[in-house]
Image (cartoon, rainbow, N blue to C red; front, side, top):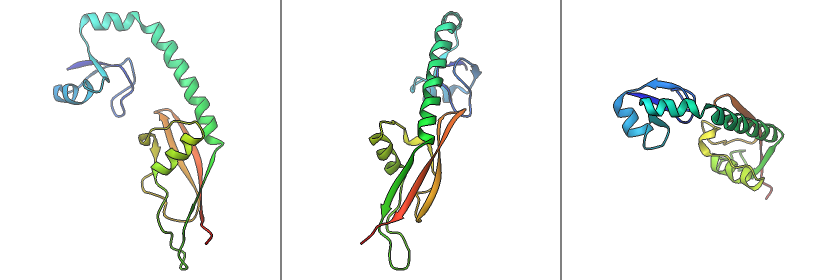
Length: 149
């Protein structure tokens, strides 16, 4: 099935590209989420006619995301968790904790943007990567300290 990508889709392509995908993938995954449009002659013509508007919008979005990436790069999130006498941390710092602290700083980040393979379960300073768009990333510092009793 020939489709036009309306939004960037990881492992498939960027907005505006025309791709050939399997019928089931398009009907069951891409179309219900509004990620693609069927590439008919009329849709292709309309897509080409709105190219200028689309490039302006994408440029504005990229500029806003780059500014957000700069702001994120300057942030250090601090967390305090209880630690046993042996130095073992009770609990952890998960994606949800990062999202809450970033939301408190007026930065809306979706959980899928945060590249954290597992929750942080140790005391120390860590760098966590946030992928805002496929080519725009930021690294935030996360400091986990032992909670005083």
